[in-house]
Amino acid sequence: MAETLLMPTLGLTMTEGTVDQWYKSVGDTVTKGEPVVSISSEKLTHDVESPVDGVLLSISVEAGGEAPCQAVIGYVGNEGETISEATEIVEEVNEIQEDVTQEMVKDQPTAVKKEGERIFATPLARKLAADKHYSLSDIIGTGGNGRITRRDVERHVPQVVSQSVISATVGEGLEGMRKVIAQRMHQSLAQTAQLTLHRKANITSLLAFRKDMKEKAGDSLSKSALSINTLLIKAVSLALKDFPQMNASYDTQVYTEHKDVHIGVAVAVDDGLVVPVVKDVHLKSLSQIGSDFVSVTSQAVDGSLASEFYRGSTFTITNLGNAGVEYFTPILNTPEIGILGIGVTSTKLVFNEEKDVTEISELPLSLTFDHQVLDGSPAAEFLGQVVYYLEHPYSLVI
Image (cartoon, rainbow, N blue to C red):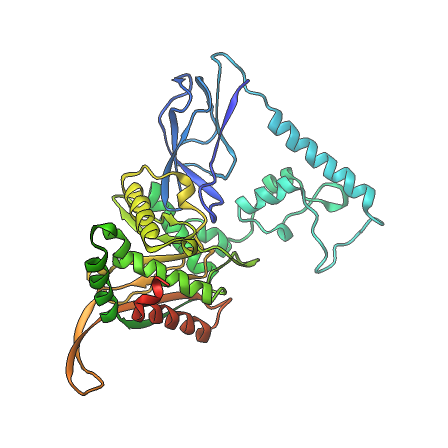
Protein backbone atom coordinates (compact mmCIF):
# COMPACT_ATOMS: atom_id res chain seq x y z
CA MET A 1 0.00 0.00 0.00
CA ALA A 2 1.29 3.44 -0.94
CA GLU A 3 2.70 5.54 1.90
CA THR A 4 2.24 9.29 2.09
CA LEU A 5 4.89 11.98 2.36
CA LEU A 6 3.46 14.70 4.58
CA MET A 7 4.35 18.34 5.11
CA PRO A 8 5.86 18.15 8.63
CA THR A 9 4.95 20.34 11.58
CA LEU A 10 8.30 21.70 12.76
CA GLY A 11 7.37 24.46 15.15
CA LEU A 12 4.77 25.88 17.49
CA THR A 13 3.82 28.56 14.96
CA MET A 14 4.10 26.57 11.75
CA THR A 15 0.85 26.23 9.79
CA GLU A 16 2.21 25.58 6.32
CA GLY A 17 5.47 24.91 4.54
CA THR A 18 7.09 25.43 1.15
CA VAL A 19 8.46 22.61 -0.99
CA ASP A 20 11.98 23.71 -1.91
CA GLN A 21 13.35 20.80 -3.92
CA TRP A 22 12.50 17.24 -4.85
CA TYR A 23 15.61 15.09 -4.71
CA LYS A 24 13.81 12.34 -6.65
CA SER A 25 11.62 12.26 -9.74
CA VAL A 26 8.47 10.18 -10.14
CA GLY A 27 9.54 6.58 -10.76
CA ASP A 28 12.90 6.89 -9.01
CA THR A 29 13.87 4.25 -6.45
CA VAL A 30 14.00 5.33 -2.80
CA THR A 31 15.08 3.59 0.38
CA LYS A 32 13.62 3.89 3.85
CA GLY A 33 15.12 6.88 5.66
CA GLU A 34 16.46 8.47 2.47
CA PRO A 35 15.74 12.22 2.02
CA VAL A 36 13.20 12.62 -0.78
CA VAL A 37 12.19 16.28 -0.60
CA SER A 38 13.38 19.47 1.11
CA ILE A 39 10.86 21.88 2.69
CA SER A 40 11.20 25.30 4.30
CA SER A 41 9.27 26.81 7.17
CA GLU A 42 9.73 28.37 10.60
CA LYS A 43 13.04 29.89 9.49
CA LEU A 44 14.62 26.53 8.72
CA THR A 45 15.09 23.97 6.00
CA HIS A 46 14.18 20.33 6.65
CA ASP A 47 14.40 17.10 4.66
CA VAL A 48 11.42 14.72 4.53
CA GLU A 49 12.56 11.10 4.42
CA SER A 50 10.94 8.10 2.78
CA PRO A 51 9.01 5.94 5.28
CA VAL A 52 9.56 2.74 3.22
CA ASP A 53 11.62 1.17 0.48
CA GLY A 54 10.08 1.57 -2.97
CA VAL A 55 9.68 4.19 -5.67
CA LEU A 56 8.36 7.74 -5.74
CA LEU A 57 4.87 7.16 -7.15
CA SER A 58 3.55 10.69 -7.28
CA ILE A 59 4.33 14.32 -6.43
CA SER A 60 1.33 16.25 -5.12
CA VAL A 61 3.10 19.59 -4.51
CA GLU A 62 5.76 20.70 -6.96
CA ALA A 63 8.91 22.62 -6.01
CA GLY A 64 7.97 26.17 -5.02
CA GLY A 65 4.48 25.14 -3.97
CA GLU A 66 3.04 25.48 -0.47
CA ALA A 67 0.97 23.09 1.61
CA PRO A 68 -0.60 23.08 5.11
CA CYS A 69 1.08 21.06 7.83
CA GLN A 70 0.28 17.33 7.58
CA ALA A 71 -0.97 17.73 4.00
CA VAL A 72 0.12 15.08 1.47
CA ILE A 73 2.95 16.30 -0.75
CA GLY A 74 3.79 12.97 -2.39
CA TYR A 75 3.43 9.18 -2.36
CA VAL A 76 5.94 6.35 -2.04
CA GLY A 77 5.14 2.69 -2.70
CA ASN A 78 5.80 -0.37 -4.83
CA GLU A 79 6.57 0.06 -8.51
CA GLY A 80 3.38 0.00 -10.58
CA GLU A 81 1.17 0.60 -7.56
CA THR A 82 -1.77 2.97 -8.08
CA ILE A 83 -2.64 5.70 -5.62
CA SER A 84 -6.06 5.57 -4.02
CA GLU A 85 -8.35 8.52 -4.42
CA ALA A 86 -9.83 7.78 -1.00
CA THR A 87 -8.88 11.15 0.41
CA GLU A 88 -10.93 13.06 -2.16
CA ILE A 89 -13.85 10.66 -1.75
CA VAL A 90 -13.85 11.11 2.02
CA GLU A 91 -13.90 14.89 1.62
CA GLU A 92 -16.89 14.73 -0.74
CA VAL A 93 -18.72 12.36 1.64
CA ASN A 94 -18.01 14.72 4.55
CA GLU A 95 -19.57 17.58 2.60
CA ILE A 96 -22.70 15.54 1.91
CA GLN A 97 -22.93 14.39 5.55
CA GLU A 98 -22.55 17.97 6.77
CA ASP A 99 -25.39 19.11 4.51
CA VAL A 100 -27.65 16.26 5.65
CA THR A 101 -26.85 16.89 9.32
CA GLN A 102 -27.67 20.57 9.01
CA GLU A 103 -31.00 19.75 7.34
CA MET A 104 -31.84 17.46 10.27
CA VAL A 105 -31.02 19.91 13.07
CA LYS A 106 -32.31 23.17 11.64
CA ASP A 107 -35.54 24.42 13.24
CA GLN A 108 -37.03 25.89 10.10
CA PRO A 109 -35.89 27.06 6.68
CA THR A 110 -34.55 30.58 6.42
CA ALA A 111 -35.62 32.44 3.31
CA VAL A 112 -33.53 35.57 3.78
CA LYS A 113 -30.07 35.82 5.36
CA LYS A 114 -30.01 38.57 7.96
CA GLU A 115 -27.05 40.74 8.93
CA GLY A 116 -24.92 39.03 11.59
CA GLU A 117 -26.51 35.64 10.91
CA ARG A 118 -24.31 32.58 11.24
CA ILE A 119 -22.63 31.45 8.03
CA PHE A 120 -22.81 27.71 7.37
CA ALA A 121 -19.92 26.12 5.48
CA THR A 122 -18.36 22.68 5.26
CA PRO A 123 -14.94 22.26 6.93
CA LEU A 124 -13.33 21.72 3.51
CA ALA A 125 -14.94 24.90 2.17
CA ARG A 126 -13.71 26.90 5.17
CA LYS A 127 -10.16 25.63 4.70
CA LEU A 128 -10.18 26.32 0.96
CA ALA A 129 -11.60 29.82 1.51
CA ALA A 130 -8.90 30.55 4.09
CA ASP A 131 -6.19 29.32 1.70
CA LYS A 132 -7.54 31.61 -1.02
CA HIS A 133 -8.02 34.52 1.43
CA TYR A 134 -11.76 34.67 0.62
CA SER A 135 -14.33 35.98 3.08
CA LEU A 136 -17.14 33.45 3.54
CA SER A 137 -19.62 36.31 3.77
CA ASP A 138 -18.88 37.12 0.10
CA ILE A 139 -19.57 33.58 -1.15
CA ILE A 140 -23.03 32.35 -2.17
CA GLY A 141 -23.77 28.90 -0.75
CA THR A 142 -25.70 26.36 -2.83
CA GLY A 143 -25.88 23.60 -0.23
CA GLY A 144 -28.69 22.85 2.21
CA ASN A 145 -29.73 25.92 4.23
CA GLY A 146 -27.42 28.01 2.06
CA ARG A 147 -24.38 26.09 3.24
CA ILE A 148 -21.16 26.93 1.40
CA THR A 149 -19.46 23.90 -0.19
CA ARG A 150 -16.08 23.37 -1.77
CA ARG A 151 -17.55 23.88 -5.23
CA ASP A 152 -18.99 27.26 -4.17
CA VAL A 153 -15.55 28.42 -3.08
CA GLU A 154 -13.94 27.20 -6.29
CA ARG A 155 -16.55 29.03 -8.39
CA HIS A 156 -16.30 32.26 -6.40
CA VAL A 157 -14.77 35.27 -8.17
CA PRO A 158 -13.67 38.04 -5.76
CA GLN A 159 -14.93 41.49 -6.70
CA VAL A 160 -12.13 43.40 -5.02
CA VAL A 161 -8.56 42.66 -3.92
CA SER A 162 -8.46 42.64 -0.13
CA GLN A 163 -5.49 43.51 2.07
CA SER A 164 -5.15 39.84 2.98
CA VAL A 165 -4.63 38.96 -0.68
CA ILE A 166 -2.03 41.70 -0.99
CA SER A 167 -0.25 40.25 2.05
CA ALA A 168 -0.14 36.89 0.32
CA THR A 169 2.33 38.37 -2.17
CA VAL A 170 4.93 38.91 0.56
CA GLY A 171 8.07 36.99 -0.28
CA GLU A 172 7.58 37.00 -4.04
CA GLY A 173 10.91 36.96 -5.81
CA LEU A 174 12.52 35.17 -2.87
CA GLU A 175 13.12 31.46 -2.44
CA GLY A 176 13.57 28.86 0.27
CA MET A 177 14.40 30.03 3.76
CA ARG A 178 14.60 33.69 2.69
CA LYS A 179 10.98 33.57 1.50
CA VAL A 180 9.81 31.93 4.71
CA ILE A 181 11.63 34.53 6.83
CA ALA A 182 10.02 37.35 4.82
CA GLN A 183 6.56 35.90 5.35
CA ARG A 184 7.10 35.21 9.05
CA MET A 185 8.46 38.69 9.74
CA HIS A 186 5.59 40.34 7.87
CA GLN A 187 3.09 38.14 9.70
CA SER A 188 4.63 39.00 13.07
CA LEU A 189 4.38 42.74 12.47
CA ALA A 190 0.87 42.47 10.99
CA GLN A 191 -0.63 40.47 13.87
CA THR A 192 0.95 42.20 16.88
CA ALA A 193 1.38 45.63 18.42
CA GLN A 194 5.13 45.66 18.97
CA LEU A 195 6.86 48.10 21.28
CA THR A 196 10.54 48.08 22.24
CA LEU A 197 12.05 49.26 25.54
CA HIS A 198 15.77 49.98 25.86
CA ARG A 199 17.90 49.84 28.98
CA LYS A 200 21.51 49.18 30.02
CA ALA A 201 22.69 46.77 32.70
CA ASN A 202 25.86 47.43 34.68
CA ILE A 203 27.65 44.09 34.28
CA THR A 204 30.86 45.06 36.07
CA SER A 205 30.00 42.71 38.95
CA LEU A 206 28.96 40.01 36.48
CA LEU A 207 32.37 40.09 34.80
CA ALA A 208 34.08 40.01 38.21
CA PHE A 209 31.86 37.07 39.17
CA ARG A 210 32.94 35.16 36.06
CA LYS A 211 36.59 35.75 36.84
CA ASP A 212 36.16 34.72 40.47
CA MET A 213 34.26 31.53 39.58
CA LYS A 214 36.84 30.54 36.97
CA GLU A 215 39.68 30.95 39.50
CA LYS A 216 37.86 28.97 42.20
CA ALA A 217 36.41 26.20 40.04
CA GLY A 218 39.36 25.76 37.70
CA ASP A 219 38.93 22.94 35.20
CA SER A 220 35.93 21.52 37.06
CA LEU A 221 33.68 24.15 35.44
CA SER A 222 33.29 24.26 31.67
CA LYS A 223 33.91 27.48 29.79
CA SER A 224 30.36 27.45 28.42
CA ALA A 225 28.91 27.51 31.96
CA LEU A 226 30.20 31.05 32.45
CA SER A 227 29.75 32.46 28.97
CA ILE A 228 27.80 35.70 28.69
CA ASN A 229 25.12 33.91 26.68
CA THR A 230 24.69 31.27 29.38
CA LEU A 231 24.44 33.88 32.13
CA LEU A 232 21.94 35.88 30.06
CA ILE A 233 19.74 32.83 29.47
CA LYS A 234 19.79 32.06 33.20
CA ALA A 235 18.96 35.66 34.15
CA VAL A 236 16.08 35.78 31.66
CA SER A 237 14.68 32.45 32.88
CA LEU A 238 14.64 33.65 36.48
CA ALA A 239 12.93 36.88 35.45
CA LEU A 240 10.34 34.92 33.45
CA LYS A 241 9.46 32.87 36.53
CA ASP A 242 9.05 36.14 38.44
CA PHE A 243 6.88 37.58 35.65
CA PRO A 244 4.92 34.63 34.17
CA GLN A 245 2.82 36.99 32.04
CA MET A 246 5.92 37.48 29.88
CA ASN A 247 6.52 33.73 29.52
CA ALA A 248 3.45 33.50 27.35
CA SER A 249 2.07 33.26 23.83
CA TYR A 250 -0.84 34.88 22.00
CA ASP A 251 -2.02 33.64 18.60
CA THR A 252 -4.60 36.45 18.05
CA GLN A 253 -7.26 34.30 19.68
CA VAL A 254 -5.87 32.53 22.75
CA TYR A 255 -3.48 33.88 25.40
CA THR A 256 -1.50 31.17 27.22
CA GLU A 257 0.95 31.48 30.12
CA HIS A 258 3.53 28.68 30.13
CA LYS A 259 4.79 26.97 33.27
CA ASP A 260 8.01 25.76 31.68
CA VAL A 261 10.70 28.07 30.34
CA HIS A 262 12.10 27.18 26.91
CA ILE A 263 14.45 29.82 25.51
CA GLY A 264 14.83 30.26 21.77
CA VAL A 265 18.20 31.62 20.64
CA ALA A 266 18.40 33.36 17.25
CA VAL A 267 21.39 32.04 15.28
CA ALA A 268 22.63 33.29 11.92
CA VAL A 269 23.33 30.62 9.31
CA ASP A 270 24.63 30.85 5.75
CA ASP A 271 21.23 31.24 4.11
CA GLY A 272 19.24 32.99 6.82
CA LEU A 273 18.26 32.72 10.45
CA VAL A 274 17.19 29.86 12.71
CA VAL A 275 15.99 29.74 16.30
CA PRO A 276 17.10 26.58 18.14
CA VAL A 277 15.62 26.08 21.60
CA VAL A 278 17.30 25.48 24.96
CA LYS A 279 14.58 23.57 26.80
CA ASP A 280 13.58 23.51 30.48
CA VAL A 281 16.01 26.27 31.39
CA HIS A 282 14.24 26.85 34.71
CA LEU A 283 15.28 23.37 35.86
CA LYS A 284 18.95 23.51 34.86
CA SER A 285 22.23 24.66 36.36
CA LEU A 286 24.61 27.03 34.60
CA SER A 287 26.71 24.06 33.46
CA GLN A 288 23.69 22.31 31.95
CA ILE A 289 22.47 25.48 30.26
CA GLY A 290 25.92 26.18 28.84
CA SER A 291 26.28 22.65 27.51
CA ASP A 292 22.81 22.67 25.93
CA PHE A 293 23.37 26.13 24.42
CA VAL A 294 26.60 25.06 22.72
CA SER A 295 25.00 21.82 21.54
CA VAL A 296 21.85 23.25 19.91
CA THR A 297 23.54 26.29 18.37
CA SER A 298 26.45 24.36 16.87
CA GLN A 299 24.12 21.71 15.44
CA ALA A 300 21.84 24.43 14.07
CA VAL A 301 24.76 26.00 12.24
CA ASP A 302 25.90 22.73 10.64
CA GLY A 303 22.32 21.66 9.89
CA SER A 304 22.27 18.53 12.03
CA LEU A 305 19.88 19.69 14.79
CA ALA A 306 16.76 17.55 15.23
CA SER A 307 13.48 19.26 14.34
CA GLU A 308 12.13 18.96 17.91
CA PHE A 309 14.70 21.54 19.02
CA TYR A 310 13.27 24.15 16.67
CA ARG A 311 9.86 24.28 18.34
CA GLY A 312 8.28 24.99 21.69
CA SER A 313 10.15 28.16 22.71
CA THR A 314 8.32 30.46 25.13
CA PHE A 315 10.69 33.45 24.87
CA THR A 316 13.53 34.34 22.50
CA ILE A 317 16.93 36.01 22.87
CA THR A 318 18.82 37.54 19.94
CA ASN A 319 22.38 38.83 20.29
CA LEU A 320 23.94 41.34 17.88
CA GLY A 321 26.77 42.31 20.20
CA ASN A 322 29.35 40.58 18.03
CA ALA A 323 28.27 42.80 15.14
CA GLY A 324 28.98 45.94 17.17
CA VAL A 325 25.28 46.89 17.43
CA GLU A 326 24.24 48.72 20.59
CA TYR A 327 20.41 48.98 20.47
CA PHE A 328 17.92 47.59 17.96
CA THR A 329 14.25 46.60 17.70
CA PRO A 330 14.00 42.79 17.49
CA ILE A 331 10.84 41.39 15.88
CA LEU A 332 8.70 39.01 17.92
CA ASN A 333 8.97 35.30 17.24
CA THR A 334 5.19 34.91 17.28
CA PRO A 335 3.14 33.66 19.02
CA GLU A 336 5.61 34.54 21.80
CA ILE A 337 4.93 37.96 23.32
CA GLY A 338 8.52 38.85 24.21
CA ILE A 339 12.00 38.88 22.71
CA LEU A 340 15.19 40.33 24.21
CA GLY A 341 17.88 41.87 22.05
CA ILE A 342 21.47 42.00 23.33
CA GLY A 343 23.90 44.69 22.19
CA VAL A 344 27.66 45.18 22.38
CA THR A 345 29.26 45.70 25.80
CA SER A 346 30.78 49.14 26.35
CA THR A 347 32.81 50.77 29.13
CA LYS A 348 32.66 54.25 30.60
CA LEU A 349 34.02 56.25 33.50
CA VAL A 350 31.66 57.19 36.35
CA PHE A 351 31.85 58.49 39.91
CA ASN A 352 31.36 55.82 42.57
CA GLU A 353 29.76 56.37 45.99
CA GLU A 354 33.06 57.73 47.33
CA LYS A 355 33.16 60.24 44.46
CA ASP A 356 36.13 58.46 42.95
CA VAL A 357 36.33 57.90 39.19
CA THR A 358 35.89 54.25 38.28
CA GLU A 359 35.31 52.26 35.10
CA ILE A 360 32.15 50.22 34.59
CA SER A 361 30.96 47.87 31.84
CA GLU A 362 27.43 48.19 30.47
CA LEU A 363 25.33 45.82 28.39
CA PRO A 364 22.53 47.30 26.21
CA LEU A 365 19.20 45.44 26.31
CA SER A 366 16.28 45.86 23.89
CA LEU A 367 12.99 44.25 24.94
CA THR A 368 10.24 43.99 22.33
CA PHE A 369 6.82 42.92 23.62
CA ASP A 370 3.25 42.64 22.32
CA HIS A 371 1.34 45.66 23.61
CA GLN A 372 -1.92 43.86 22.84
CA VAL A 373 -1.53 41.66 25.89
CA LEU A 374 0.99 43.51 28.06
CA ASP A 375 1.35 47.16 29.02
CA GLY A 376 4.54 49.17 29.20
CA SER A 377 4.79 49.24 32.99
CA PRO A 378 4.89 45.44 33.63
CA ALA A 379 7.17 45.00 30.60
CA ALA A 380 9.54 47.59 32.08
CA GLU A 381 9.40 45.79 35.43
CA PHE A 382 10.33 42.52 33.71
CA LEU A 383 13.26 44.19 31.96
CA GLY A 384 14.29 45.68 35.29
CA GLN A 385 14.26 42.21 36.84
CA VAL A 386 16.57 40.91 34.10
CA VAL A 387 18.89 43.81 34.88
CA TYR A 388 18.71 42.98 38.60
CA TYR A 389 19.88 39.40 38.05
CA LEU A 390 22.70 40.55 35.76
CA GLU A 391 23.82 43.13 38.32
CA HIS A 392 23.59 40.61 41.20
CA PRO A 393 25.32 37.63 39.56
CA TYR A 394 25.54 35.38 42.63
CA SER A 395 21.74 35.17 42.50
CA LEU A 396 22.21 33.13 39.31
CA VAL A 397 23.68 30.22 41.24
CA ILE A 398 21.38 30.20 44.26
